Amino acid sequence: MLESKYQTEFLDKLRTIFAGCIILKNNASYLQGVPDWIILYCNKWATLEIKRTICAHKQPNQAHYVNRMNNMSYSAFVYPENEQQIILELIEHFKGETQT
Image (cartoon, rainbow, N blue to C red; front, side, top):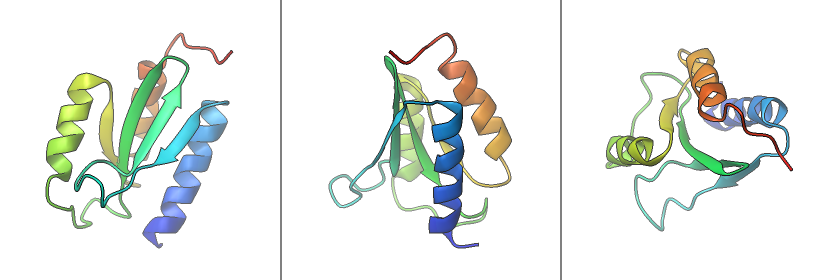
């Protein structure tokens, strides 16, 4: 499966689970390594770097920014092999929040 197809499917799942969330695509040329996606939900946020497989190539600095942003809020690499775990972690992260 192409990475873009997997990203679309995964982000559609998030839109269903977190109805009303805003999902934005970050500009990789602005800050190399910053995760590709930011999810805004109520008063919380998360960033995700979505990969086609667990073995997919990671760009320089991606692990650094995922770790740094995870210390600020929530951030993770997502691939089919850990998708369910990431969804559970996002549910816990956004727990108690309701869209107004």
